[in-house]
Image (tube, rainbow, N blue to C red; front, side, top):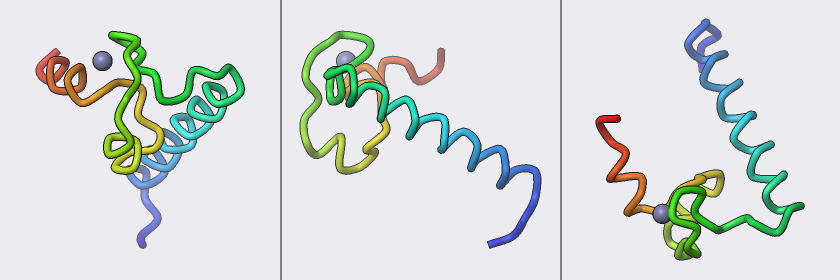
Length: 64
Ligand SMILES: [Zn+2]
């Protein structure tokens, strides 16, 4: 692993996402899509535990 601005930015963003996921755990909304408010399936959460949107919404948002 190299130390560079890009890596630091990535780590900072990752930390933000993990903290946001923990806040959602506290609030009881973890695993619920921020966009359509449906429950996300476990495969989605396993692939990216800190995700905030379901697969459908993530795909729909590509190109925003
Ligand atoms: Zn969704």
